[in-house]
Length: 306
Image (cartoon, rainbow, N blue to C red; front, top):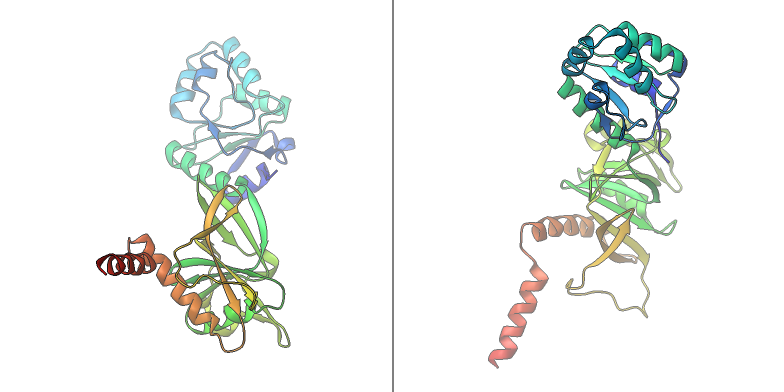
């Protein structure tokens, strides 16, 4: 299970730690944020205690109208052993009752100068990205004409060499050897390189090269949406490969299906050019133009006329 520590949240958003310092290593395990307005009013039946609690001007204005006893009662119920942290927006002064309860339960209270809505959106996006389902795939991810192409295949089949040729032709490397893929949203897969091997490419016989150093910052990017998978395999004379492109194969990555092409490899085939054409053809299909289908339709019409 992916986790984000409160200390990471503090560092990323430059938040001010007001109280509950002993709990800054607490883990945030859900990306949803709670605005505990009903809880401050006294309704705790469905209190989502595992979520980050975000308080703005509306909630704190109502809180300040409560009696002292009610304030202590509400804060003691909001600050639980499972609550990761509480964030106060707009730089609003934190009520003393919250500080006492947070120190008692070791629930960090953080303060930000940002407006509540903007802060909520930014934290949600950050948590969704960090907590999204993730898998690691052995392959190479390249941005070809704006299409994220994941090149897979057995070791030594030529994935990295093909990626190098694509970079030389003006495309951008995202990751080599190991690609971390996260599912963001319902059907969007985003790939990136592990930090240790970012911008690096391994070429057998040559070694490890830094693509950004050799080709410039325009030859790399940190992440890219995975739109197409191209699998390289050694040419098998006994196997029948698709020659029309009517049958579209798909592969499931996490919970999302992605189009997959199988390219046979043998001497004389320019894989970089073929992958460029595959990326352009993918874009045309998304725009409604399917060359193979149009050819099939014309062929059927000709046979019907005869």
